[in-house]
Image (tube, rainbow, N blue to C red; front, top):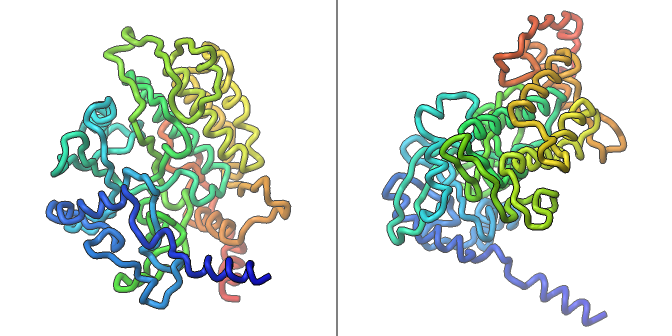
Length: 397
């Protein structure tokens, strides 16, 4: 018993791993003075002379903003553009790989005007002050595509549609991504999803007082339907680009996150565009389809995209046509159906979800957002007066 007490006391006195910067964080902190000189400000943790606030503030570490770390080896970090207070993400990109030219090609002014382009845009490029091996790229501050949870069938179908649309756009321009996975699909929440803002490391919290490190739970949030989010592919470090469709050819070598798929079997060469189809399908299959019930309408499409024979998979354009037909077969009522988590045995729907669905109905916002030009939608029926009155009474009591 005494030995256990000693061990417990030792664990209490051990310093937190977040009391010091990692090697990658130290590099970012080293860049802070230079970043400030070109207009970017990092969070308190990366300021010169930083010391953990929770050691003197009286706040618990877990409630202190400067305890939040993006990742121990992250080459991406959030920042604020000082002139506009816009939150952005900074990425250190190697100059000796294909990533930079492919990303710049996809971020040209002409291509950024195309709404089918779902590649994260480059806002600025800065040479680093101490090396030519990397450059600093600035992009919008985004969230993982599936955080917070999806709330309606329409939100899932919109996500699937726009990501397949983005993949079709990539393939149309002879670019194969080669690393499609949940970590490389993000969403732009805009200003409506989290009206009070969100912390880039933990979106469910924010800092109410800029003069205090204290974190607070986000008091409210909107939904994808109401906020009209946009989805993006990121990370083109594994990507390949061909001069034309006629120049496309098979490649070799396992890439990406889905390494157990048959394309890589026996070390044979494979079609990189067919690989993208499989990888996107695996992302949907292991993500939303595994988490939520009631999405059987997607099974035929996802199964075809996951076909073990790459030649039997649809092209991105064919998959886009398929998902559009799926959406056309749904009614507004079926699209706004709340999603059920498979792991939730209660099968209940959170009141906040119902309220946001009802708010969209009151505002006559179609459950497929952002709108799909090829999708002709009937004018939504107004919400009956009795339901609007009941909703108002519920909020009073």
